[in-house]
Amino acid sequence: MRRVMAGADPESPQRQVTLPAAWDDTAAAALAELAPGDGSVALAIAAHDWIRPVAERALRAGMEAPLAERLHRMLLLRHGAPTGPVWRGDVGPLPGFTLNLASFHDAATGFDAPAFAEAVETAVTTLTLAAPSATRIAVGMADLAALLALLGIDYGSDASLAIARSLGAILRGRAEAASGALARLFGKIAPAPLDWPAPAGSTPLPGLAEAARAARQAAAAVDGLRHAALTAIAEPGAADALLGVETGGIAPAFSPLGAAGGLSRTARAWLAAKGVSAETALADLLAGGDPLPTPSAAAHAALHDAVAPFMHAMPVRPEPVRQPVHVVRRRELPPRRAGYTQKASVGGHRLYVRTGEYDDGTLGEVFVALHKEGAAFRGLMDNFAIAVSLGLQHGVPLEAYVEAFTFTRFGPAGAVEGDPAVAHATSLLDYTFRHLAANYLGRRDIPEAEVEEADTVGNGSRDHAPLLPLELPAEASPRARRRGFRVVSK
Image 1 (tube, helix red, strand yellow):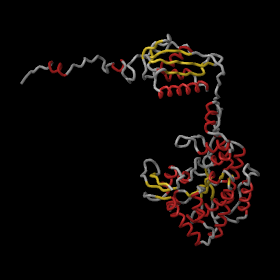
Image 2 (tube, rainbow, N blue to C red; image 1 turned 180 degrees about the horizontal axis):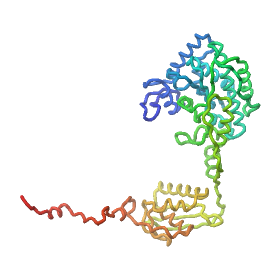
Image 3 (cartoon, rainbow, N blue to C red; image 1 turned 60 degrees about the horizontal axis):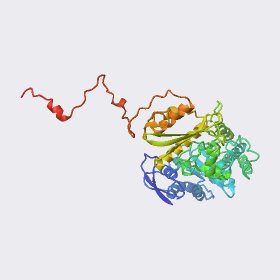
């Protein structure tokens, strides 16, 4: 276990949170939001406070299942958790429970469909006992994208649709079976029409299709339900964050980056499933490849349509982009290419501009080598040149770089020697793109650089222009001003 100070958001009061050592600060912030009060909170105690009354009601109703033990285990394994109102004991008309699909996957045994089915029934029972008068509950699943990544299955594939339908069938079938069992204890309020489609005949996951069919058979044996609505794909909330969910519901992972700026768990899972290291993926990306495919809006919409028949509530359907999408591909430079090296000095600081060209003579890469600058500045300039080169190879016009980087002002700056095309430059970048504009674009219309002292900001002659229509007189010294005073009376 570890202790950390956390709040529901950066502006909320901080409270001490105790939770498992492997859980990150996002989970700590979620627990700080879920647990009632504003004092210190521990996961075990906060969970006990809402599990205990639910377990007591189960015993009074004559239920023999070890509900408290199941709920504690589900929470520690991050299989599932109820939404905020259940934690705070203020359950409203639509209590919810989130099941983390990715947590049911094991690298050695695969997806645990029986455990998922049991978790659905446990969630329905829990919400019913937590809110006995509620006729509508929302048991949902989340992080489908992470589960597919763990399996190495493309989000936009037919296999993902089959898996999603089977998961939806298990969720709906086991929820109706549990609701039917509760109706025999507390009374039924709705029929059991079995008005949702049969699950997929097969899936890439062993045993998943069979579990889906078993769930439908269990629902078919029910003669009445305790609830008018049971299943939902809801907006992500604190319960999702507590469970380590990265993508809410069935949404895709549109970005491979996590909140901290590194690769997300979903991206790392995809690479691991494909046997690709992060270093290899980076090299592939720089070479113009696509090691982390980005799901399309059309794929998101297709999964929405696949899951919707099994849900009583769904988010708004995502609309695919209708205009054609132009995929920018990298234009590879020839292995042996033309170009030149230009030696020059700016304000007495020597540099070398080296270019690489395509067979048609257009610019494809540029490098700037510095002579005596510090290692940090040289490294920054090297990486800047690489970024510009990648942009040129992906279709960014040289004109855009010229407009962006001419007249950038920082030292070294001053007179240019060794290059007749450029007389003065306000910085090394200004010189580089003035030179490229003259030699690759034929530009001779760029205004002359205004020479200023190095490493100054806003010290040009224009900044000394008067703010009034007439020139102000030169300011005299205090002694001179005193000599100008004349006493006119006493």
